[in-house]
Length: 533
Image (cartoon, rainbow, N blue to C red; front, side, top):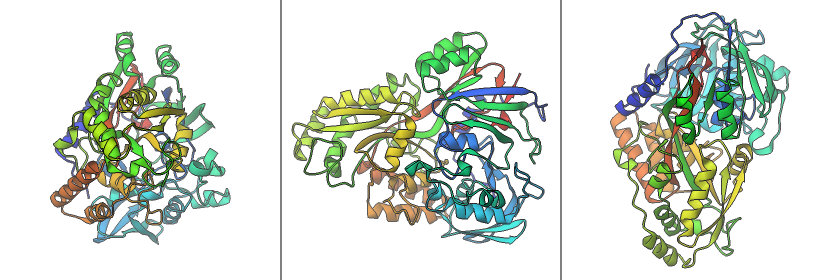
């Protein structure tokens, strides 16, 4: 069973593969060290406790699932060797024999069943990613059946989100369920210790300081890297991160600030790589509270009125943001999915022009002829040039009487605030799994924690008719019909201004020429594809 990707997505993935030299050295000797730096550190060593991309992209090297994405983002076997459909809603997976966890425990079907229950528990940060799975059952030691709630054309994409834990290890160490790290800040043994089956083991972890990984010599798969160790060194300051690259302290940084691209390319021994990321940066509104928590309006919620949301959208000059703040390292979008994803339509690259007169008219009609004030929550890292984006947006909205007070905070605090919905107006981003369904279910759906929908719909946007449309698209097996249903759903959300997309993020790497790696559109650094000369 394989997934056919649309031509635009195939081109996007091909560009990612061509923009960097691919590692082709075969089973190289493990002798080299690799250091890389990102804006933010990981939130936990437990992939079920923190589903953010910064955490997931590191722990993909430690924990594995039944299936994974290859270099072209096609689904391929991982801890499963094969799968067959028993019915329209049930897949049977044959598991890989002889696999052991880093702690020595044997991998069996009971670990898959346990991991599903663990990752769908109330404290899990990824339970929404597994919302389409109804049950996981062990048939024998090396066979499991995974049942969906309904026919699902992208069920394997959801299965790829399931990190497999050792039931024996987790239970023995009091980590049978993930700590609610995101919302309460609590921890358990799995928060600071790891025991996966992947190509690398965790050797050391210091919050926001480093994650040191070491080669797993017992890994089951053939590998093409030559790494003995790999260390993530998070550096929040963009200038310090660039200095770390050019001084040789690290071998790769992401993101590279656009203003430093020419400098890095001009430095002997270094180069840059651009890859369109499957991620959209957007502005969101609190559309649930009767009164906003951070606004001068004390008798109602302005964002419940679509005229106010539409006014904001006609003030924010996204092409200008892309040219100036992002320096061209961004792609225009007017929906919450990037180019190439199933459901993308060429019309989604077009934004209505800025119209200050119309915006003032809409605000006056809504009862705000003189505007109002509101706080914009903004992360200091995690989104490329986030602070500059927020400052620019504030200036644009000021032209129609909207006074924006900026609340800048580190990404961990920012995401925690969003998870608790303690915000009125916010900057955020969302990465897809190369299909629009995840975005529709997690961001655009009415919040329904029990059903696993709308778990990251921070503003609590709600449209029951759209919910029905998106659920129908999620169960439609005909690709052409499903694509049209997704396009219509995205258009409805856009018309309702459920959020304001700013741009599709483009990944910009700074890298030593001694490093060979395969960049992915989801920003993951797969260490099994990295070699150091």
